[in-house]
Structures are given as structure tokens and as C-alpha cells.
Amino acid sequence: MTVSAHYQIGIEVGGLPILVNTKDAAFRDQLAAHYAGFISRSQPPRFHLDVELLSAPLNPGAEIAVEARNGRWNVRRADFIAECDPQAGRATIRQSAGTHSFDSALRIMHTLALASEGGFLLHAASAIRNGRAFIFSGVSGAGKTTLTRMAPADATILTDEVSYVRFRSGIFEACGTPFAGELARNGANCAAPVKTLFFLEQGPENHSGEIQPQEALRLLLRNILFFAADPELVSELFRTANEFLELVPARRLTFRPEPHVWSLIQ
Amino acid sequence: MKPTFIERGTAIASRLLGNEMMVMSVKDSTFFTLNELATVIWNAADGCTDLSEIVCQKICPAFDVDYQTAITDANRFVEELSQHGILVASGQPKNAIETVKVSA
Image (cartoon, rainbow over all chains, first blue to last red; front, top):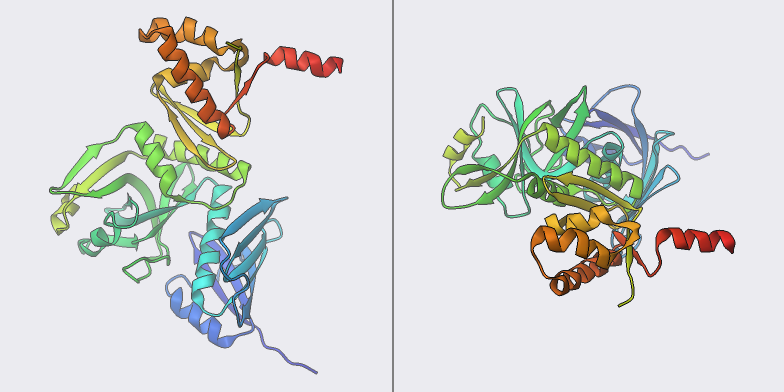
């Protein structure tokens, strides 16, 4: 008779509880450390996620491929294969050991789940100040982590890399995430209504300026994280991006790397 | 010159912001911002009107541009967007194609 133990851990980002099942106690402990602040006992979980650890990469060199077909999601990359049935609330990941592959698959699951619920993940830092969330979007090198490092004590950092935007009760909220960038620190696990979306660029002086709606939409779509070539979800995402910009003012934030820039963010 | 009838693709999402049309292919997520002139062509792309007629009636008088310049630009615009399925160009009007299909 073979006896095998199962270990569970709940991870909840953006109010989406996922119960992870693994046969590897060490991996469970790695997840507990990596997602500190986002460990959850919420019941029932939205997804039961079974993780199978492999000793070698599955598809060496393979580019990421995401398919949403017949209501099921399939994600393939060199280091993992993930399958998800959102209706049944069940998902599986076969992956290389470690949290890197798991974290990538988790982000993609969230992009797919959010796309059908009027939200999105955005390549952006975000923070709460005076009860309102501010989002700072930009490509790598635009200054997301730099701005985050200079945040005043009264600002609550939600993330320095991947912002979580969801639509609830008629408003867009930003939620904290464990999806960290150079800061290598999980964001605070809380949420607030979004007050302003800033598109970042570094410059000789601090300045917050208006941005044309067309430009705002172009920049927003460019920075939304989405991988599935699924016409229905892409169409939904386009609609969501437009609705977001109708409700949330977008501005360009030019700044020099010194803390005074936060006087423009409140 | 052969007539060119243009129609908006079906796998697209679009939104008018100001005088400019934002168009995205939902197949490959390619995003286009159509300027005011291109937006006029987009709005007139009913599959039944020849592109040269659109240029003559809606572009030249409104934008103070000569026909040859405008039709050259319009053809280039149609060719580029057709490559992404944003526009569909045909040598026959939409109704004529439907008639052929029915009679066949």
C-alpha cells in the first residue's frame, strides 16, 4: 500500500481565493514564504489548484502559449503546463520546482479571471494615499520601483510591478499583489478606489499634465498584461479599458528621482 | 481603375474618442488609432460604396486635398488595415456578393 500526503495552502489575491494542493511539503513552505501576507483560509475557494512538480522542464525553449477554448484555459510555457476549468473551479499545473513557474501561471490565471469580470492586471506600481489608490504605469525603466522607494510614510504600497484592477459596485479598485518587481517585497494586501492613473516618464522636473483620451487608451492597452489570443476576452478587455478611462482620470507624471514628486500625488 | 469596396471586419473592437477612431483586432490585439481622415473612410466603409466615391464625396471637399493624393493615401490605408482583418476589401459590392451566393 502506498501512502501519500497532501499539503494545502490558500492564496488570495484581489479577493480571488485559490486553494493549492501539493504532495511536496517543502514546496508548500516555499509558497507560504513567497506569498506572505496573501495566505488565506477563505471558504469556499474559487479554484482548487493541484500542483505537480517535475524534475526537468517540459518544453525547453517553448514560447508562452495561452488558449481559452470552450470555456477552458490552457497555458504552456517552457517550464510549465497549466489547465483550468473556471466553471468547475478546478486547475492543474505541471511545473519545474520552485515558485517562479507557479508565480507566472498564477498571474496568467488572474489575467484570465479578471478579463471576464471587468478587471485587468497592469504593468504598473500602485499605492494608497488618503484612502484612494494611485496607479503608476510604465514600461521597464520608466521609474515604477524608483517612485515606490521614495514613497512617504503615509503611502501604502500595493505593488511596484503588477497592479491589480477590479470592478466592484460600480467603481474600479486597485488591490495589493504579491507580484513584486525590483523592490522584491510583497505589496500590502488591501484595496481602495482608484483616484488617478499616471503614466510615468522621468524628466528634469516634477510635473503632472493632462493626456489626450486617445493616448491614454493606447498606453493603457499597451501596459495591460494579457496573453490569450481569445477574441471574446480581448473584446471584453477593450471594453473594460474604455470604461476604466471614462471613470478614472489619466495623467502623465514626469518626475525626477527625488521624494518631492509625491506632493503631486494626493 | 478597378472599384474597391471596403467593409469593416467582424473581429474588431472600436471606440470613437474625439474625432479619432480607436480600433483593435481581437484576433491579434493589434491596435490602431485612425486619424480624422481615416475615421471618415472607416465610417463610410459599408461594403457597398466604392472607395473612389468615398474619397470624392467625403474626403476631398472636407479636407481640401486633391483626388490623386487622397486616393493614394486611402488605398495605402485600406491595404494596411486589410492585412490585419480590420477592413475587408473586395472588387464587388456587398449586396452583389450576397446575390451571387444566393443564386449559386
